[in-house]
Image (tube, rainbow, N blue to C red; front, side, top):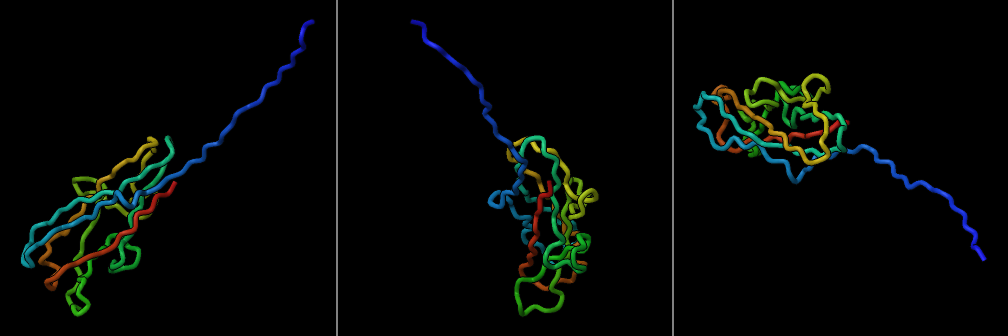
Length: 156
């Protein structure tokens, strides 16, 4: 006696949605080191941010003006502040962050204007952050340690 058979088909599915992250643990500080208060030479330093997005996703990385900008949200007025709360005058040093090693393209927070624009590869991408303090003596800054905090944001 022959046996009977019947077949059917079904689909196996998944929907992948795009996603991006900036890896906080992989970010490196821009540390200008120690500089004489009378130094008029530019001081350069590098750091980095790391981003990972779904492959082929276009994205922008924005860097804020920092916590101490002379004008709120204006990346052209970035400043580091003396970390000693007793120093209340001459307590800022101007600096800038750039997208390129020539330090000609300011890295800012306006998408389409001064953010870093890329298309994802699907793996971690490390992007250098190029910093410069121009003529430290011009700030007439008090001695001590200076710091600012930058927020990196990825928009996709």
